[in-house]
Length: 469
Image (cartoon, rainbow, N blue to C red; front, side, top):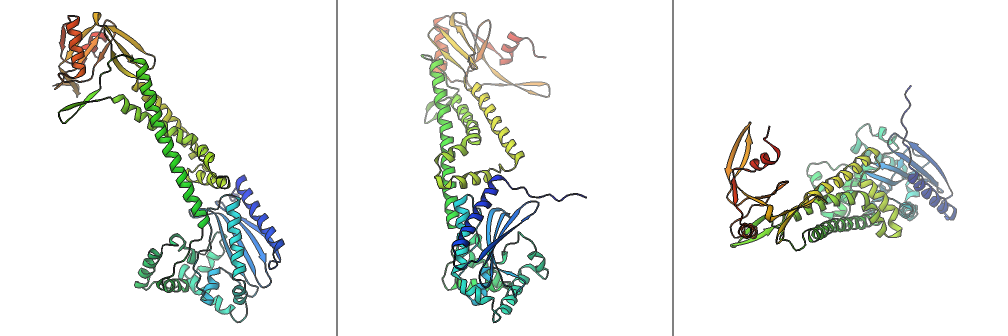
C-alpha cells in the first residue's frame, strides 16, 4: 500500500510555529478572559495547518495558522465554536447576525518572521476581546438557530448544496468573506464589482448585501495587512534600489574598465571608430566596443544580481525586517524549489561566461602610431605591424554565399586591410576625409606605398590560409 506523502516543515517554519505557540501561551497565562489553550495540527501533502484552541467562558476561539493557501503563505484566520452548534463560525458570521458595520478584513497572510507572526496572532485575540459580548451572545439559545441558518444560507450560495464537504478541509478559509481582501481599501473597485453582480441578480449572500449597502453609504473598509503590506512595499522598494544600483554599477564598472584598457593598450594611438553617424552634415564617430561593453555589463548584472542581491538587501534591511525580507526574497525568486534554484545558479554562471566572451570581443581593435600600428585581437594577444613592412589593400566588394554560389556587391565606402607577412586586419568602413581615411593616406604617402585593390576579403584570407574548400 502506497504511503501518503506528508508535508515536511522547514526549520524556519518550525521556528515560526514555535513563536506563535509561545505568544499564545503567554497571552492565555496573562489573560483574565482566556482559560486555557490546546494545540493540534494537520499534515497534507502540500501544506501544514497548526491550530490553537483557546477556551473562553462561553465559546472556543480556534486560531488557524496555515503554511500556504492558494498564492499566499503563513496565513492566519480565526473561527468561533459553540457547544450547542456543529459549525465553526467566522467573525463575519457574527457581524451578519447582528448587522455590525465592521467590514475590515481579519485575515492575515505572508507573515514572515516573529514580529509579523505575533502581530497577526495578537490582532486576532484582540479582535476576539473587542467583540467578546457579541460572540457570546451569538451562542445563546436566543440567537444560535438564526446564526446557523445565516451560515447555511451563505455557504449554499457560495459552495452549492455540497458545501458541507468543504468544511472538512483543514485548509478551507472563509472565502465568502475574504475574497474581498484583494480589493480592500479600493472602494470604487469593490463597488463596481458588487453593482455588476447586483445587475445580474447574483448578490445572494448576506455579507455581500450588507457590504454593498455599507459602501453606498460612503464608508470604506480597511485593509487587514497594513503592517505586512507596508513592509512588502519597503521590501519591493529596497529590492528595486539594490537591483538598480547593481545594474548601473555593472554598466559603469564595465565602461570604466574598457576605457582603462584602451587607455593602457593604445596610449598615444589613434583608434579608428567602427563607424560614423552622419548628423546635420557632421560625421560623429561611433565606437562599438563601448556598445559591446554595455552588453557585457548587462550579463555581469545578471550574474551579480543572481548571486549577491539577497546579501546586499539583507545588508541594508532594517533589523526587525530581516527575517521577513529573507523569506520574501526566497519566495519571489522561487528558491524553495531546489531544481529551480540550481537552474537559476546555472543561468547566472552562464551570464558570467557570456560576459567573459563579450570582454574578449571588446578588446579586439587596432591603434595607429607614428611608425607602426598595434593589433589587439583578444586579452593579451597583441602584435605590431611596422608601416615600412606593411601591405595596404582596398577591398572593393563584399561577398555573400547563397546555395554554394558567391554573390558580390560593391562597397559604398572605403574598406582597407593592413597586413604584414604574419597577419592582417580589416579596418572599419570609412568615407573620404574621415580620420581613418586620412591616416591611411598619410601612411601611403609617407612610406610610398601602393594600395592594392582586391575583389573581396576572401582574397586576403586565401592568400594567408589557402583556398576555401
